[in-house]
Length: 164
Image (cartoon, rainbow, N blue to C red; front, top):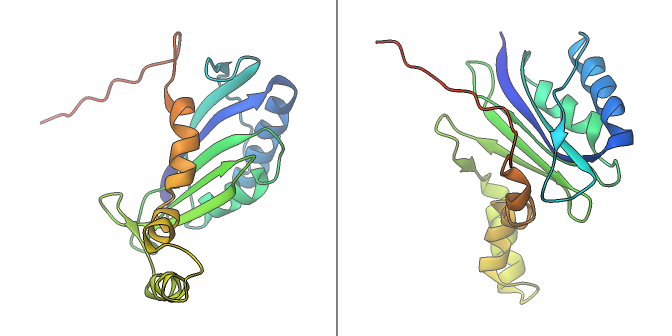
């Protein structure tokens, strides 16, 4: 059983780029050469995208291999398959890593226990329910990564064609 996904390296210092490639290659078991382009949202950093195919759990292994590297911003997605739900990992230097399970349409699926815990914290006055749900949906990560998601000038464009 295989799934596929995409690794988005939104920003990495130039010196870190080969290390990212080595880490990805170590997870996938094949040589990886990413097409690095300048990241206009953070001068002096580079960005790349890489489509991958592998066993369910590959997205988790990629995120684990890259997490904790200072100044690295990335996202890893995995499509759902017969053996596993989809996944999304987002990581920023300030926020750390975010993980969400995704359904067949890309919607974030929040487990019941996490919703109950968020409601309990809000009920106790420890936090605001809207802020709790926002965090469960990954909004702080989306807010921080959004400027980096735009490819900028010179980014490769992939045109997808539907054959009927």
